[in-house]
Image 1 (cartoon, helix red, strand yellow):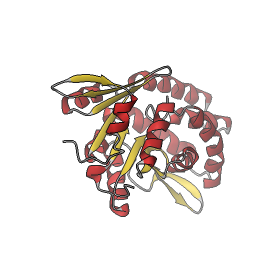
Image 2 (cartoon, one colour):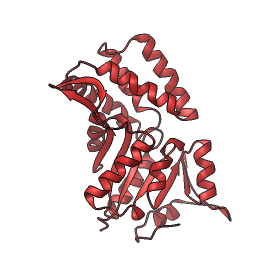
Image 3 (cartoon, rainbow, N blue to C red):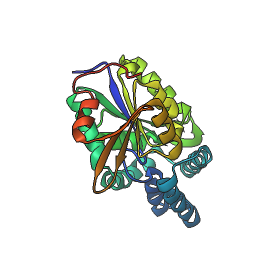
Length: 256
């Protein structure tokens, strides 16, 4: 039982294939919260994101879109949207990611989603998948309705690392023993925060850094799973057995 450590999973293109924001956009469009042209734009961005990853400008634009869509609306309305969004996200959960979550649970570690998506969606989805909890973007609420502003830092980039560090302090986790999984260079601050960073389906920038620093690189596909351990000295490929060992069913130290 390892209650001094936890595993933190990025959501889009890591825990699920594709974009959670587009699922939210579809549900919001059906409720008249976004226009058809905005939905089409979000769909194009979702396709680009799937094959090319995110950027700071895209993330900020999506943040502003969501804040504007929910401004003045009651919290209960977004919670109702959550049922539809979560159903779509459950269908997109990668089998390999679920296996990693299960391995961490077997090792006694708590597990969390860390996402820029709204905290209401992230928490409910975390519960549906069977994770310990979720960290997401927190919007300001006054008198039961959204103001269109944030009440905490945007949970993206350095904001993710800040939120993870805060949670670790509150729960007594040793970050040197914690794991973090992400596909994007934007999550580098979170990956650098823990002792066991793992690049999952990484974009080119993150793949390059993971290779240089000797971080494990995991690539998922629909038909096969490859786990690749890379270092500057050697490149090797291994199967699921190596992945299981790496995940620390015997608890290891910080691999630096």
